[in-house]
Length: 106
Picture 1: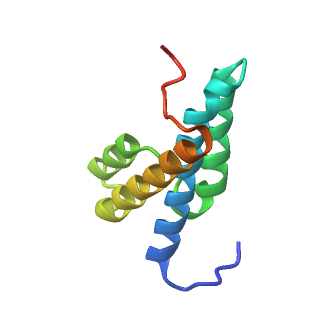
Picture 2 (picture 1 turned 30 degrees about the horizontal axis):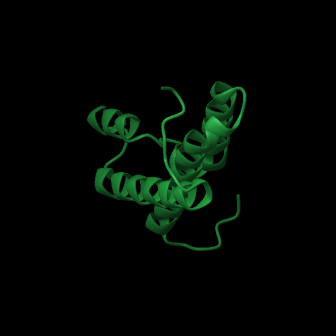
C-alpha cells in the first residue's frame, strides 16, 4: 500500500475511525435483515480487512487496551479516541437512516 500522507498518526486515526464506523453501522442496521449474525460478522470482517494492514485492525477498544497492556503499541489515546469518534459517527449515521437505534437482539 503506497502511503500518500506521511503522518502515521493521521493514518491510524482515519482507518480506526472507518473501521469502528463500519462495525457500529453494521451492528445497528443488522436488525433490518433476516440473519443479523451474518451482517455483524461481515461488518467485522470488512472492518478488519480494511484496517488490518495499516493499524493492526484493533477496531474494538477492549482489544486495543489488551494489546497496549501486552506492550504491542504505545498509542492508546490515539486508538481509543479514533475508535470512539468512528463509533459515534456510525451511531449517528444509523440513527439518521433508521430514525432510532435499537439493539438487534432483544
